[in-house]
Image (cartoon, rainbow, N blue to C red; front, side):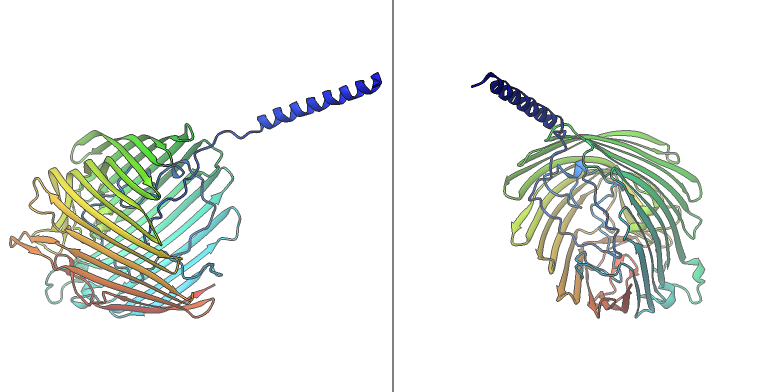
Length: 565
């Protein structure tokens, strides 16, 4: 072979080798850095049916670290370190019966609604009027705005005509702005509730102003959170203010700020941190400054069959009126084991300071009287365990047992001498609460959804005589069914038993009758823009008492039309 040809070929081989080496180096430099661990498939779906009153802004969700690693989706009842925006509530023993006139399932009656805005108008017995409107801007790629206004009122009530009337008006304005790195959101709201203290025999010609209660609540909040899935450090920050004022010269200012962060250390190991700060001033006679500060570091390890979390909740509470300035430390942890398929077994421990404010108390029991003593509840220890999973064929289940110890465990009871108002009572010792819960859900391809829940509570109190107005047994059965995308039916059945109360004027202890409350709602779509609805509440017509001397409306109905645009 001629030397010139060999030289050319040698040069070509050298050039090819150089290009190959450069390509390999460039590819290596372009390899993406390790990201957070991916979401595991086969997680158990939470089959809870929720009340949905308006269409949400549909923006791409954040691909969050602390949502990528759990072995199973969170249950609303599961007691664990969850890093929520809202302050955690005391979730044992006092489930609320919130019988809205229009209970609606989360299952959507239409797959893709053509119109985002709507107006609803309806009327019913007890002089009931209902009106609701919603308008939103959703056609922009990176922002959305929506506003809603709702009014529901009854001119007469279950007893004594207009002296048990009530009305509820709510306004809400929300906005969201999305970029490739973060999401901004804000909320502005106003609620006005008006009702009467009718839980006693009223004299003839009573001045209605003396028994009227009116709550005006303003709230504003802003938040920012990461939405870039490439960020190893994930974060969310929210701050909000609630201002409450009632008809008895009581007011409350509550400012809460929440930070949540997480960082992926390895593909299976994640560090979490949460911090809360609540500054509260309540004026009801004397001024009371009540603050709570929390920090919640934790570490979580996740593998396909095993998840472990360990952390600490450190909380400081101050109360100027009661002279309180205490700091607590609560170890928290949970182990979740998946022996096969989607069957989980878990065990854990939790503790925390549960904030009790005038707003949270009125949210549970609207009949709270003036100058009620406010004190936080300390969850000293909560040892829980259970199992949850997917049984196949659309069935899911969960069963759990919790044994918790509390200080300042609260109950409600009638005041004296005016038994038409309530006040909280606290167990200053160590209260022990055993909770046994079970849940079974079924979902059939978004056509039929059903969930059955049951809870049994056992209370061991140190200083209180009884767990007044807390049920021993609570149950709920919720269903929704869609027929040919035209007929949408929902039903809810509530059961409460074992509620006891005491009249401190007469000294008589009373066991309230069991509560059985059945509700139906039917929506019929007349076309793309019109629909009609009918709701039947308290079908059995029982004027039961959730709180002593306060009978509720019997069988009540509401019907109306809706127009979408």
